[in-house]
Length: 220
Ligand SMILES: C[S@@+](CC[C@H](N)C(=O)[O-])C[C@H]1O[C@@H](n2cnc3c(N)ncnc32)[C@H](O)[C@@H]1O
Image (cartoon, rainbow, N blue to C red; front, top):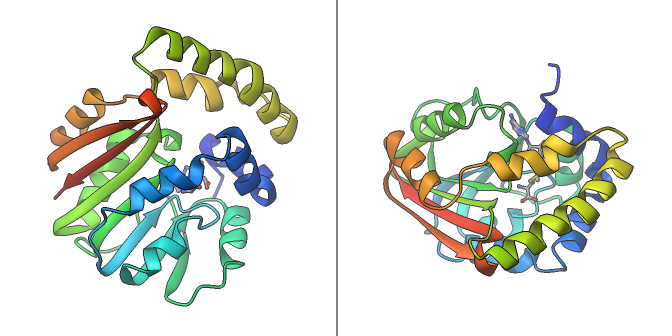
């Protein structure tokens, strides 16, 4: 399978992904993940969609009997395999064509993944399809702060720090990937409307750090 654009960068930085993500978030990323995971109701099976290096696995195995981590990037999955957690099954696959039966999961969790999918609507339809009735979607994604000063600081940080670092590591133009996609990506109320339009109910959002990231939750 030829890797989609949103995967190529991760193929190249897999070994440094967790360090880079923590560094670029000023060490705050574990707090975001805690906030994402804490309210998740436990159950039988959870899908960690775009699981990457499996940064969420330790939190998910505490709540679910079985954890399935899916990602398109083999190098990221290799890093995830090093976590060596039993009860976690790793699957290479595409978020736009999930290799699972309808209504397979009690919950789907997507941490910093939605923005990288080539077709957001399609990925939401797939998530909806594989969730059991009453199952929950929990997502974390980068957004844009509403406050003009904070927004401008955040955009400057992306342009001056994240982009040059991304270019250096990935050795290709990652502008669209690391910058354009954040500006264009629906956040807050707009994302809630998307979720509702795909059939989810009780869709809601919560901005963290003034809207630099958002948590989304919804039910099937
Ligand atoms: C920013 S990383 C997030 C990893 C992890 N969830 C975390 O919170 O650290 C985004 C991940 O999305 C994956 N990805 C991008 N497009 C994908 C697709 N179409 N199907 C599956 N995974 C995809 C990438 O390979 C990468 O591992």
